[in-house]
Amino acid sequence: MEYFTHLLILFAIYAILGLSLNLVMGYSGQFSLAHAAFYGIGAYTTAILTTQYNWNFFLAMVFGVFSAFLSSALIGVILSKFKGDYYTLGSLGFNVIIFATMLNWQSLTRGPLGIPGIPRPELFGIDFSINFNFLMLTAVSLLFVYLISQYTADSSFGRALKAIREDEQAISVFGYNTHHFKLAIFVIGAGLAAIAGSLFAAYITFIDPTTFHVNESVFLWSIIILGGLGNLRGSLLGALFLILLPEILRFVGFPNEIAAQTRFGIYGLLLVIFMLYKPQGLLGEYKL
Amino acid sequence: MKILETHNLKKHFGGVYAVNDLSIGFERGKITGLIGPNGSGKSTFTNLLTGIHKIDAGAMIIDGIDLKKIIPHQAPLYGITRTFQEIKLFEQMTVLDNMLVVITERNVFGALFSKHTKLDLKKAEDAMNNVGLWGKRYQLAVNLSYGQRKLLEIARALAMNAKIIFFDEPFAGLFKEMIKKVVEIMEEMREHGKTIILIEHNMELIRQLCDYLYVLDEGKLLAHGDPGKVLSERKVIEAYLGE
Image (cartoon, rainbow over all chains, first blue to last red; front, top):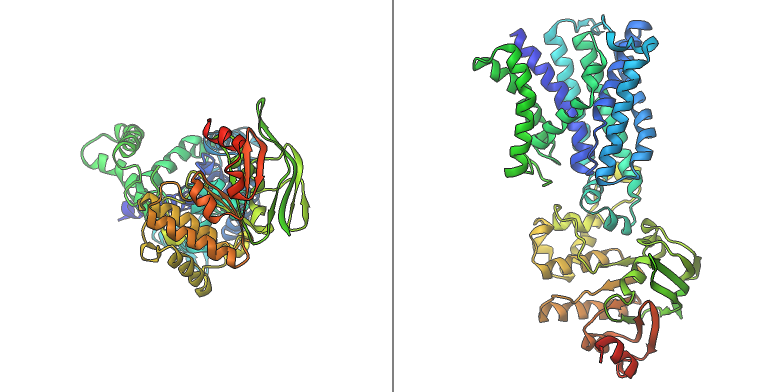
């Protein structure tokens, strides 16, 4: 039971990341490799504020979201001027910068040693150090992020994002300042990713920079490409599939070490297969 | 009275002037033809006036406003909209969404906190009924036939309710019945006081529709005036038909 609770918590965290990245990538067509950086900013802000300054977790989470808003706004102002490959390369650069900052700003982040002892939260007498309670917390967070994402996608703003994805030049001639729209969704996506970061930090109770490497951004790409770009339920399906996959490998007899090492190969293989035979993903609306 | 004028407009790509010192004007509520051989600068001219290309030199006066540059998203503020020579639809969106996106809120925050209203839907329905596409509203744009795609572009321009509409080869590839429909739409727009700038290669349609005609060649003005007279000028025939 504890094992399934653990898997469901991880699923919920990655589903939040998938939903938030899908808004940026699947709806507005910005192929960002910086998403893990905002996940990391949420995690580090929460970890630092709760361990070094004894902040309440929920307050730290809100601050983490604002930190992601601020950093993504600064980064997004530059990135929103890029398109296509240049955009992706620019976002990769930003993920590397944030990763290097986490690794090297040792007085704040403890560098490669990471931050241990991150406390589990407590609210109205509910002790979230019990995994089932933490699962409820992540489930509520996932629902919150899903509803925000659904609202955004269904609004006129969401329709404009899709049009930007389809043809940025054409939609700009119809009166849309596309830079503003791209920046806004980038900031919203970053803020939602920071929620996942805060939850991850409090759940694992330890973070170090390796979790927020650009590899993690690639993994998040896999989730939404496999689940389906431009489809929110696709993000959930992609997260479920890719979180469960290594576990299935264990069950079919792969030794733990080999299953862990094999999963990246399988993620890569899946991406190739999907690009070849189903480029819109399982539930996607947007064909690459 | 002219609603749009350009003064010594210039645009070059590398060493080639696509638009070279062009000073022309367009009468309010009229259909003005803009013709010329391929590469004569017609589409570049449209791109300059809708902000897609930056102007190198010169100026334009749009409805009394003096402008040295125009940014694409500002074009509708000056009452300008357009169709594209190569159809630019939002392919993986429904036909209805293609329409609603040009009708609903353009401001980021306004758009974030709003959905389309009944009035927006009515505007979309009216424009789509005009071109007979309302029945296709839930289809993806990518699945429309070539002619229907052209009509959707025209419907989108109609829904913008602009004062000045650039139609860049709207009849290319259309069937006879569709051509008739688009001609009717343009004539109706003129009756409602809209200014139409028509880039077209079909001279019969130019004669039928246009009140005035400009002929461009190598980015320069070659001839202008009454369509019937201009099209019979020797230099126009030579430039256009290579005779």
